[in-house]
Image 1 (tube, rainbow, N blue to C red):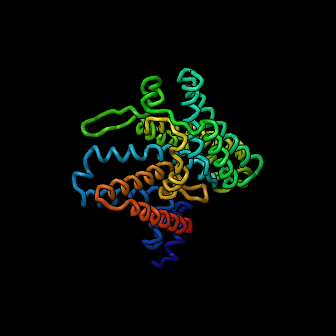
Image 2: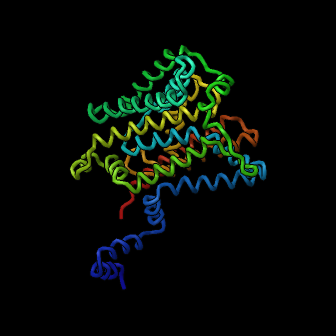
Image 3: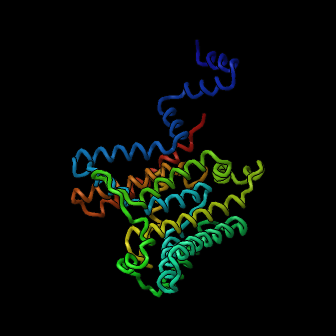
Length: 353
């Protein structure tokens, strides 16, 4: 029976049969392209597993030990949390260049409200979280209501928050020992749990739980489907009844909230409150998102892919360091991965069934 006759037979059966025939009739390359289009996090997962096996084969137990593997998680916890905030914005076809600055300002507010104003630590933490949410709301309002480009809005917010951070803190650092003695709650996310040779911090546990919760919300709730719809085609989403402005504002507010929690986790990670820490958070979060297979054009990708992207960077960083390689090789390989990830994304977007 010819291919045309098979198609006519499938068409007579049902529309579902037509779709199944169309996928079946593709070449092997087209099938792979279609599969990756359906599961964009598959590519970073394959790269993560492959790079882990390669470094494990080269370094043996030095790399494959429970301590080393959990050390990777500790190193990427801040990027992973920020990556959640960045992912939400990029899924709506935007970008947020201010996530790192909002994170640092939130941590500075928590520290100064405790040590400069003498407020209880829980109140100071809530003030820092509110600071992040307010910054996110301003971004969302300008993008959704004023119709300004996300790149320009967040670029301006990055500069404003960065300047506010240094002016407000007077460029002073609150020492780790002072925090440990007087406000240990600020270092909460730095507390550790040892399981065998593996060491997990509360920050790592929070990052994993946050990724799982956000992955569920994006895939299983109406709000999550609206986020994808807005990123894919905002005009079509509005015609179908999605409140585009409200969705965009909620995304940016939630992004700001997540950045504030990243600021709290940053205090636990470095022990101190420093206005100069985490300045590359915006670039690192975008790197994790892009390598993780989330499309910069919006509407496609997953939070889990972002986590895989962050872990890939962590694997390369630790693996090359243990091999004694120059740190610049890490940046070189990450740059190659970014370009490769965007190339694969462009290829996957051309899929047609």
